[in-house]
Length: 498
Image (cartoon, rainbow, N blue to C red; front, top):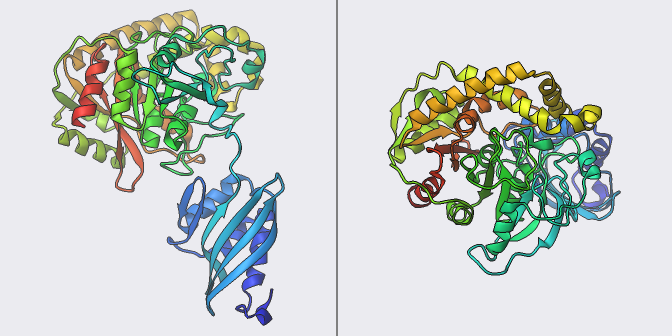
């Protein structure tokens, strides 16, 4: 095509220059051929990117676009300075795609002002699922959860299937499980189907939602940001609508973090309230069963199946100033506003020992993680992604005396936290910030968030994540804590009053 075909001068030259730059991953040329400014758009199945800087950052971190061939380019001219081009493409891996671009003639030449890319969806998104079926395991067909589908975190035993723990070497060495984990069996009996086995951060030893082998599950509520972990696949499956219930675990925040990052409801149950038989451990002193849903009503319905009765208690709400201050201003202001709307009073706890509490939590968690997996991992540390490998290597150096000293601090912290919570409900930011981007300092975000999430872990408390939204439209969450055993009270409160 050329200007002699009735097309504006230079338009198709710019189109083909863009296509060459895309295949060459020429970031400088791609930046030049996309219009500058905050209104430029680029969208695909993962979501919409707004603004030239945001689009440029995305391109710089993705490692190039899939190889493809342009089969045809269809042009609709709006006027001498504007046109739409729809390109039919064929991917090298197979399948047809479409790319729709709006072009404008700027003083510097033709540039894309908006683009939408469509490629065939994979038969199985291995970032989210390790195994999936229709269903993978059928439930009883009757009961309070009939019609619901469960994404099971790949730490739980599902009869006839292997546990992968997010690590290909562990999966290869695993044998099919002879029986369902107790919590899986209860959900099946209640009528829910198991949709599949969802990916996890390796051995659940992360909060980010990143896996060096399978990639990062998508975050539909905050595109191109991390999904949160380690119950990452379960959360993304629910957020994407692939399943209605995400069965996960919470040791240091692995339910609450993905709930906050993806705008979901989630519960970390009281330590030992739900049977962990058939669950691969990380740190048994802190490991708990948890789940995520898209509604408070379903979160409560699952609790009616899995949880013991509550001892009851008060519904006075308090917001702790020192914990609120650990969140970034955008998250903290939203949590404070929500807490005020729910009728929470403000109070100070001091918490001068919080840094020491987190240190003890991390030390004891590390000790137990190495006791659980060290013998198997010692000759296989090279099978782990760099971040998880670093944590296990540190864990291998924790000695028994350090673990004993940490346990003493943990016991003291548990008693103090339970005393402060008392008969009340406590509002805490679920995470220190909104979901980070993959290129952010994820380790710093993890440490900041652990200062918040470790409180429930140290106290062995139930915690329910309530989805909120910042002024910028990004998901975040408040967590409601209560005394041990009051899980059902929390679920009833959020279902009826939040």
